[in-house]
Length: 242
Image 1 (spheres, rainbow, N blue to C red):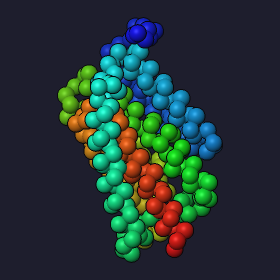
Image 2: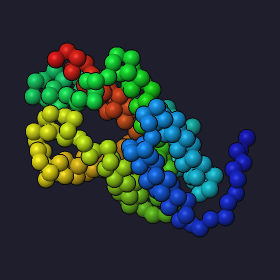
Image 3: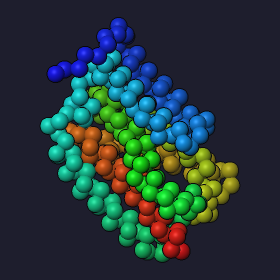
């Protein structure tokens, strides 16, 4: 049975602008205002509102958001394969002395075993990954696809994904000793932030490609879980065993 969404009379670009503004507000709230305990419920609420904007207001079809049921199996297969490859790369990198130092993030080292489990299995997948994938590879990509070419839609969504990481990357050189050595001083700190934004934008292109090739949002979700949750888990063990 089809879901009856409230019909709103809006301009052709207003839902897209509203989604971008909502994400901008959410970014400031989660990074600068809200306490840590509010991160998960806030992210889930933002995910629901963004889906309502796309499905109920902008009338983007579920398949264009990567939510079509007929693509879930293919998306899961692609996602599991990529996640496995990421896990192998992370473990190998953690075992090699020159690259193992990259996992020494002070924020990870201060987390208890229970806190690590919460981060890896709850906060990251259901707070960070779910919101970011629904927002950037689902809602924004789908809205852009209704208005422009695939290439421009991918670039626009990925550029916004890079800017999304601007605030979180401001202290990147302070919490990792390797990055602190590489990007010392004010100029180095600025360079670290710029590289972080560009790097996450490029990652966004890869996530978009996985989403479009598989036809499902499941593929980038599993891939994102691999980079974030597995990365956190490996870093935690590297620091604790050091």
